[in-house]
Length: 158
Image 1 (cartoon, one colour):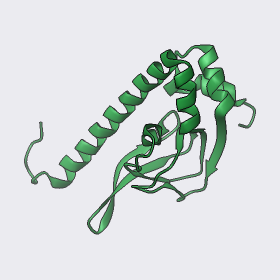
Image 2 (cartoon, rainbow, N blue to C red):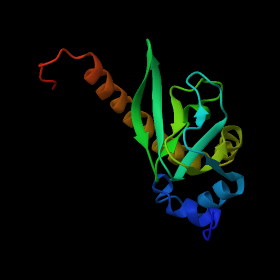
Image 3 (tube, helix red, strand yellow):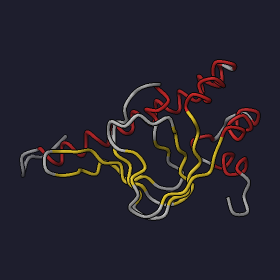
């Protein structure tokens, strides 16, 4: 990761803020740096992927398929995370992720993360708390996009 070590990048990532040092170190042991070129599909809606990502730089569009078009739900950037559904096991991806510019990220294999959490349930609980906040935020972003797309024009939304 250029001049930073993977461990330093993890310590500085907002998603992991406040985690114990030994938990960050455990994550670093199973982490892998990945890169995506501009306009690269990271994963498609419905795909089974085992990777969870922490974004270090670049921007990624989270999109869903609608009849005749692709709808952008949210744009993610440095400090964000994506691929939460991988941590559920054999669940398909909820969104499509497409890089809008070159992206650097830290990837984790979901199976290895779940093994770590089984060995240290308090760590698993802390991680899942954070993950649930991400899911809630994505649901909110999806709701706002749907309201924008399907609300009658001229109607004030509450």
